[in-house]
Length: 269
Ligand code: IPE
Ligand code: IPE
Ligand code: MG
Image (cartoon, rainbow, N blue to C red):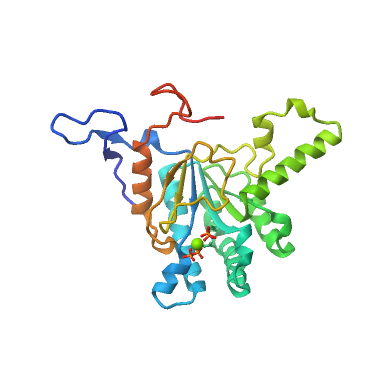
């Protein structure tokens, strides 16, 4: 897709031009390193069309393909997609089975394209709770794409932020009990490295589609200084133009990380 590289927008805090028009801001320097998306609204998309919710999820996979390609073209380093939460097991078994099977089918059908596009695939979430055959498919994708470096695609599946924090705390507690770690020396960096996201940069921009404005247990630790975007679009309708709009909006934000104007780096940690 052909995208504009100059935004007709003023950075927050900067004066508008004398004629009242907003100053042009180049998008390229403000492309977030890490974008995370809460892909919400599949069920409502289907309901509006009097279709089963499962059809909404299937159409959602097409939106996944669009955003993965677009993020790669745009030079986004890390793209995290929230595909299934640990709380989503509360849904009817038929819907849960469809979501599990969509992940399996997505990896099976799209892995070759991801590999040739230089995408590295990683899953975050409680993988021990998944069926061994699904795990094997995920881990095969992770192994085969491990050396890729164009973009890192993180699939948050069976993921819950609190669960991830508890698992990290257990790892640290075990290391302390084993005598490999002094509890008084534990710092934020040690804790972050024990999370599923390990050494990844924190998300700069979190997009949640469908108009809901909540975090639903997503990247609780990592989102400390994330910017948010809440487009009203239902996930199956989300496309490159809407993604671009979210990036343009992000480019206008002024991130401070607790410092004063202009005094902060563009990332923490
Ligand atoms: C997002 O769409 C997909 C998952 C949570 C797995 P939903 O299924 O939550 O759609 P709505 O929110 O009911 O419309
Ligand atoms: C969050 O959406 C999880 C995913 C998008 C995978 P939900 O639809 O499950 O969240 P709630 O229940 O509306 O908070
Ligand atoms: Mg939802």
